[in-house]
Amino acid sequence: MSRSAHPAGPRHADVLPEGHYSAPAADLNVLDEKVWSRTVTRDADGALTVGGIAVARLAEEFGTPAYFLDESDFRARCRAWADAFGPDADVFYAGKAFLSRAVVRWLKEEGLNLDVCSGGELTTALDAGMPAERIAFHGNNKTVAEIERAVEAGVGRIVLDSFQEIVRVAHIAQRHGVRQRVQIRVTVGVEAHTHEFIATAHEDQKFGIALADGQAAEAVRRALALDGLELIGVHSHIGSQIFDMAGFEVSARRVVQLLAEIRDEHGVELPEIDLGGGLGIAYTSDDDPREPHEIAKALSDIVGRECEAAKLRTPRISVEPGRAIVGPTAFTLYEVGTIKPLEGLRTYVSVDGGMSDNIRTALYDAEYSVALVSRTSDAEPMLVRVVGKHCESGDIVVKDAFLPADLAPGDLIAVPATGAYCRSMASNYNHALRPPVVAVRDGEARVIVRRETEEDLLRLDVG
Ligand SMILES: *Cc1c(COP(=O)(O)O)cnc(C)c1O
Image 1: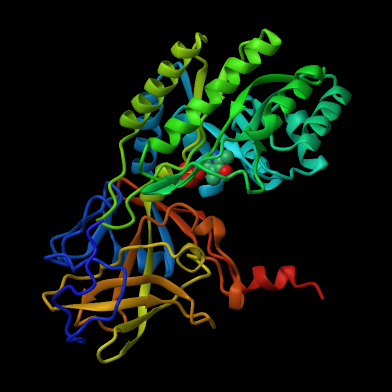
Image 2: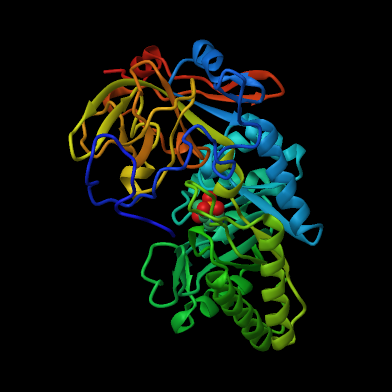
């Protein structure tokens, strides 16, 4: 990453404070297409438009803060993933990134499968008509009631995450007189994040069954012995926001080695492997994500090579992108409320949302971009920190970025790439009303998740 602690330009500082930020773009009015959804552009007046609709109109009709989701971009990304992996592999969208009934219908129409990891996500998926056989059920502590519902619904696979769950799912399946298709989630000792991966000691986590010490082999032994289970494969998910394929390479090699051991011990070749999700997207201009076809080729090359070496039939591969599909398709629109310049430091720009609609900056130190979108400006860039309206000094939306120095209360600013893990992690902190998600497509905007109201808050408050 090309980071500079002392870029030139901003008005409020002769010497910029230490920070993790790039120099300002040459022209702040230019929208970097890497971080914005596909139909985003500026109109003749300089206002940002998405799906052909200007943000001022969107703000007027739907209010701020709000998430605007570029439906045609979402659908195009689904198709790109499905096409890249082809008919001999399966793409499961990870619903936890963002799930609603509209999203489920788009996934269904575009030929994707769906991962869920709670009863609530399962209900949403089934209610919107996703065929149960296209649903995979994940989670390290699924309740008995959740497993019952998944088995009754006939989900295509349950990903077993612990020794207890192997027995639990087998019993429930038997009680229902079915053989439940399952995978076993293994922790391969690799953890990957963004630009680096670490290939030691990452069994130290709550998910999955460790390959080390023969734990995974023992889990396979137990699963194969239970009538209620049809073991179809092994699952591995190594991290999030990954750009480097090296972690997947190690993971795929270890998973294939396990398949070879299973064949040697039990005489069965499991037909599937799932390599999880975690593929990175561009949050800032410094991020360079890979295209689905590059990822598909890299993964199938690795698996093919390892299987050939182990003399195994190549298993069917599945992947589970969440962020890589929905992340880039939405932005959050905010109105600027107050502006507080701190001479020699930075300018705090407060917006009408915050950590209740985007917890990722506070939670993971995530980086985001921001742009003035209700107009263009020729003013100098100024170093800003975009903060929310909550009672926490850690309530930061964008830690370090540049906005034009003539920014004023009432301006609309937008944070791109907020489609994943923003609305789905949104909270009611300070009794904030969670923002709506508005799908925009071909000049039409429609609410797919409505804004919460104060009545919604009071309805839960039954005391
Ligand atoms: C979170 C998760 C995913 C999706 O991760 P992304 O970073 O959104 O691609 C996929 N599979 C599993 C098991 C997960 O827990």
